[in-house]
Length: 256
Image 1 (spheres, rainbow, N blue to C red):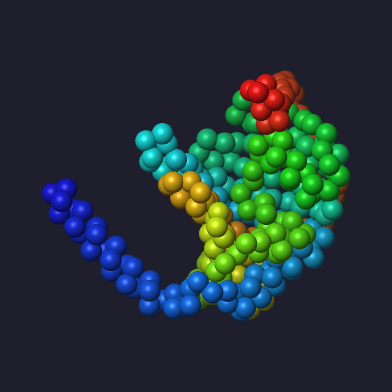
Image 2 (tube, rainbow, N blue to C red):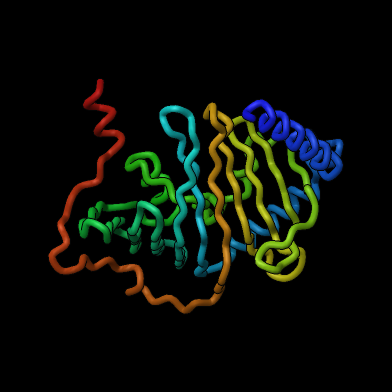
């Protein structure tokens, strides 16, 4: 039975590969200017927004010790007020937390355990996200899309860019774009008409043997939410326990 299932799966894979080959253009290893222009139109539009909010459904693939991939899901809301305000709330399988940045301080609150950590942060969103990633090990899915210089950053070392075709995301017709770099493949779905706000974003890590992916599906975009500064000010709940971030630079230094 196992052999039969394997053969059926192999046949199905071959059929899917054949079908996919009829969709993806033959020049898949070239950079299609139309794909690049669509990506730039979307990212430049996002960068031009002074503030916005969006809901996302995130699926992150984690690889277990034996190589199995496990998908972890979370529902999220992101609010941004440029140049230096950000609030992200995540609730999912193993996470229930908020991530607040008011231009001076970065705070992370874990509702499940009622503890929080705060640390001084750089004075703009881009520098704060770099600091969070490089020093604290905090990586927010799709955070690269909110950089004001997202387009040149994401296009670095891109060797392939194609438009796969049309796809319906949340009932909206989109252009499905695929880009390849030596380290990652990323896909983005941009509405065919109207505001070019991305509706889906997938990043696949090609440096990991299992090629895990992170998928973000976006909805309920609001490009004029009238956010006040108080929205981003973190006030720890009563009886919350304060702790410290585990700094990557400190842990690295202690290991040497």
